[in-house]
Length: 112
Length: 115
Image (cartoon, rainbow over all chains, first blue to last red):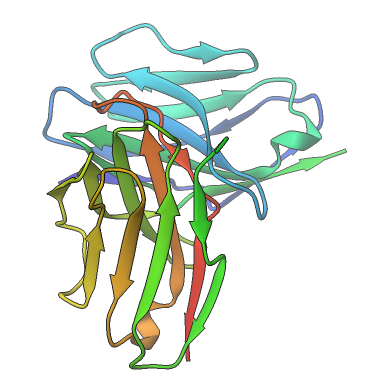
């Protein structure tokens, strides 16, 4: 079974600053994928970024990047140059054999 | 359609009633997933389909929960004899192809309140 832990229920960042959201996971599988999803208030959940566990290189998507530490089972999300539109709940997730496991989310507030 | 749609968006049921929640995935998407999201928590896996085949239903909390996707497109999640603990948002997601690497496209969810 997979578990995903997001230890920060809430985070706050000043507009244009950088923030890092933490995620740790546990799995006995060697082949899996990791995701960060964003759920804006009253809107649908969308993919932010994806990481293949077999790749050592950290994934990057514009202002979003991850720090993937496989041995430590850590998968943090860094948001650079934070914008007001980044305010949302962020979920870390693993996907193994067709089954996804999500953390309980981190609510990100962006202050103007 | 352009995205995943779910209906109804809101459902209030009296304890003991049966409910049916519908999911219309993105056209042509092979896999379809159902999740239950309690207030303040992340989505929890219920079941998933590859076309019309239900490949994993290990997350269904009891035999009161039943899901189907008879023609490999629209899916229905049915909850019989609803209980108060069934109150949650039920999310549907679909993926274009098979595989854990696939991006899941989520619907807006159905918010179920059991009184």
